[in-house]
Amino acid sequence: QKEVEQNSGPLSVPEGAIASLNCTYSDRGSQSFFWYRQYSGKSPELIMFIYSNGDKEDGRFTAQLNKASQYVSLLIRDSQPSDSATYLCAFRLGGYSSASKIIFGSGTRLSIRP
Amino acid sequence: KAGVTQTPRYLIKTRGQQVTLSCSPISGHRSVSWYQQTPGQGLQFLFEYFSETQRNKGNFPGRFSGRQFSNSRSEMNVSTLELGDSALYLCASSSGYETAYGYTFGSGTRLTVV
Image (tube, chains in turn cyan, orange):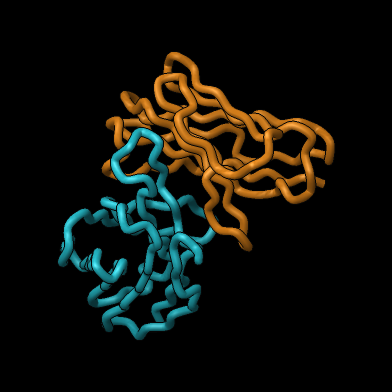
């Protein structure tokens, strides 16, 4: 089993709709979860991080974490063409130890159609 | 505040050669991590340095090595280059000891091995 599983997409969503991106992870001890956005030809950019079960909202973005199901998701409300990018799910493998590292999923390609 | 600076941006090397990539983290950040990104494998963790010490390493052959200097700048070296080493190499810096808030990535060095 891969450490982080994401649907590679592409996920096509009409402008103004809600885009829903999902991710599952393998390490039950993980405490920190991240969503990165990567535009084509650019480096990843951190858009959200979440530690606690439940929802965390930041503008049009909502991250949802369910540790029991080892599931994290990202909702993008009122999707805009500028949201078209690859979204990378990541978590810290190794808990809070000094040997921990951040592991990335392969990303979901999101396309917002006008 | 300056971001993460990687040099050079692009490199073309021949099989068998060696290459050194450089990364300057955000001022005050003491942790530097290196990742390799390819279309097929996504973001793969290479290693992390903290206060001049390698504290975590990924599953890459010994041809891949790195170091960190007292000013937190880091270098990554790949010896005996292979065609499969062609990739985008990303450096990421983080504040704090536990990388709790995720990484900030540099723009990357795109290495092409011919």
